[in-house]
Structures are given as structure tokens and as C-alpha cells.
Image (cartoon, rainbow, N blue to C red):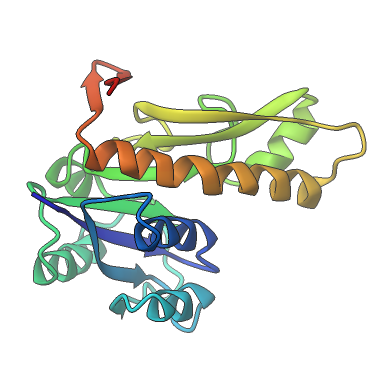
Length: 209
């Protein structure tokens, strides 16, 4: 059975594009992109999605943040209309600048992935690259994880390390981290589609071929 995919975005959608490109070129098999949902109108990600012939939907939150089941119900309605269900779907958060409500997390338990620009559990939340620089770490990176009811606290699927250079600023560090994000997010989606991820407590075990 194929996996029906929805991607939630708020901005440029570069991680979304990395996933869609991998589906188009056959690196990811058995995944059908059904919809790209944005909480903001007129963002680049919507144009990119249309370029890949993926349906788009704007569910405008009018700048209101924080977990909100009433808002998330509108997302669920859109997902169900596109046949992205808890039994056949995968939802990828790709720069989606909202916290999902506990009700949404429970409904789509272990069917929602997120990408974060640090080696979790270090530097969760916003401005992770700045947090890493201010703390003075020598190594940071990025993490793909399943979401749970916390903020960037769900079981970790994949991580990739990035060296912090002495001359780095937020922009240069973020740029190098983003390159790694574009590698590991499609890889995580492929592993999910191949049925090779097993959640055991807080650990995600990758089943070998």
C-alpha cells in the first residue's frame, strides 16, 4: 500500500522541495504527495509545490501561534479530504511555524515527522543555530524526529552533525545545516515508506534491508 503524503509549510519550502524531488526522481518509492498546506498565503513553498504538480491549500492562521485544536481541525479536514489518514498517511512538517495540538498528535500518532536544525535534545525551539553559537558548541547539526506532545521532544529518527567554525555567524551556520537537512529528511521519508522504522520506547530502530 502506498503512503499518502501531506507537507505542512510556512515559508520557502526548501525541505519540502528536497522531499518532492526525491519522490520525482524515484529515490523515494511508494509515496504519493497529496497536498501541501501552508498557514501563510503567498509563500514560496506554494509555488514550488505547484511546480511539482502537488495540490496546495492555505489555512491561514492570521499570525496566531500556539497549539490550537480548533485550528488543527481545519488541517485534519483537509488531510481527510485528500485521503491522508492515520492508517495510510504521513505528515511532514517542513518549516511549519506552529506547534501541533495534543489532539492532532494523538490522532496522527507516529505519522508526523519534523526537521529541526540542531542535534536534539540540544537547542530545541526557535533560533537553534543562534543558540548553538551563543553556547559555544563545536558541533551542532540537524534532526528528523517524530513529533509528540512536547516541543522538539519526539523520538529521533536520523541526525547529522555539522562542525561549528570559528568564523561562523548565524547565516553561514544555518546554510551548512540546511544542506544536511535536505539529505536526511528525504532519507527518513524513504525509511518510513519502506516500513523500516520501529519505535521502541524513545528509540527509533532502523530495520536493515
